[in-house]
Image (tube, rainbow, N blue to C red; front, side):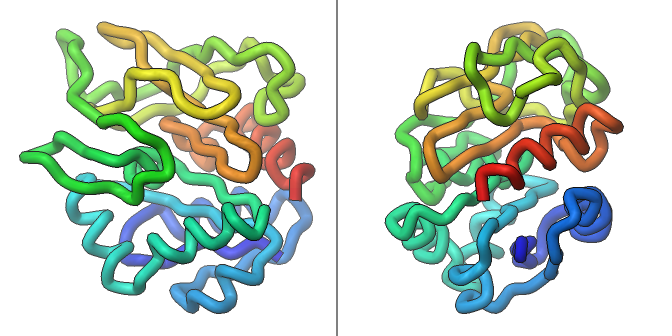
Length: 197
């Protein structure tokens, strides 16, 4: 069973539909115990870093994500759900993230923001997430991103400057783009992730 964390932010219904194509049972929930026990946890996110962290703090989900890593249970962050896994977000001030990875999420240096639409990804060699879809494009909607390498494997995208578009770090993975809005390539990435559960 895959739990999609409902903390007041994210494309929950579109995520639910996309992850259901994997053949797994999908549940939308804010119940911490269910999320802790789930085979996989998805942390979606839409909007601003600070607002998403308030939602996370309101249901004490930061500890949940930390515990899942200790228990070796896979978690996938999407968009702002990736950004809040870092220690700091610089959107409209300085805000503390969950701190799974050290580093800051800052504004992209690009002539046009938000970075919205399809873009390519430089997938890392031996990636589980991008297996079979190494040369595909994915759908992005964001103005902020992490720019320093973290985790075991990193994927990169360029829009004005190079930024992290995905991280694979044992039981913790994340994508800056929206796989649930990325057509067949996004569904393939979701299925690749569910194979790790």
